[in-house]
Image 1 (cartoon, rainbow, N blue to C red):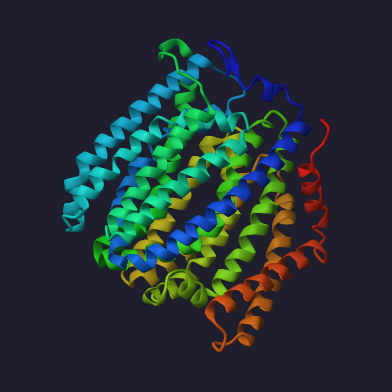
Image 2: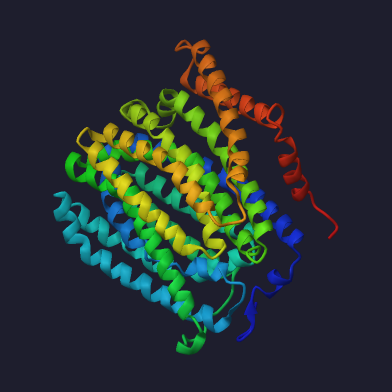
Length: 499
């Protein structure tokens, strides 16, 4: 525990860069492994809830989440990333940031609760008022845990973070499942969304027994608040871009259409989002430790970028090829309408994998404003695609969203790396191997799909097909495309050493 007036992160700054590299790689393994556990929990909960609840139940929660998510953009005020990114930070500074986050969390709770009547009126459904009132409590729990979580990230305590997130998910899932079985309907989903941040808050306090002091005007947080405001505005722009379609679908097509679209979106995004968020939780603090050495920062980012693509591409290919089987197994027969939406979203998931990691690079290297400007480029085009597609329902929205994200990939990547230690050739070298292996895996998976016709159970078809896709992808990537050394290097970093 650091005493008053001492600087946080002194040990991290003094740590040799090779140790930072080793800790980040091992942390990545821990994070991905724990995300694997959480993926199984989420998938199991999704499978059961999809059979216990109706599309309307999910749509009702989705309507409130669309608004609550907007308020949620301000819950950290960008101050978590500031705490992690700064090379040195004092007790007084973190204490001041803690109380700011607590005040913001309280204000957001009041704001969402006060907006409950307007939400119900906007969607023409009175059931949304009590849902919004109850769901607002989550903001208070989040506000009280932001800085403790950030300090755990800063100190690269990835095992503790993995335990906290896994326990919070398991406990909230069990409570939601029990309520679903008892017939509480959409309230089971609301309960899950409240219990998860509550357990996470308690876990952060236990793992990081830091006690904040009183806030101080002279703590030197003005520049931190400035960066936090840029990051918050960035999140606001991104949220508008990626959630307009949900609000429009709920408004014009109703709860059932939004519920179908939302399940397809969640199912498509679940495996890749969990994997990428696990890597992001390790990558950002690790890259921030290297910000004073642009060359090492660039190399570290590119290596993580290859890993993200290598995990995302085969997963997305399998989801596209075996969408019918996955929906049948995961959600059940009543969700068959999600299949075409599920497939239409796959280009967007690949686009996210190509674009989103550059946000870690830009923010960790002190280029938060450029990240904001890029978001301002993305938002209007994605919203335009959504507005054009909404007249055709959920499928039109999915197509418009994916089309715009695909078009934006090249300009966003080029702008992100401009003027940095990463060249266009570096990016191409990182991207071409996973993309080429993805093409080969797609061909192999398509062929296997024709061999495994409907005479075989859906679960068997999905499992065998996915194994073939992953196997062909990694064999192609490691050997003909010569990425074997990259992954061997990662394994060496994972291996324990006497140091």
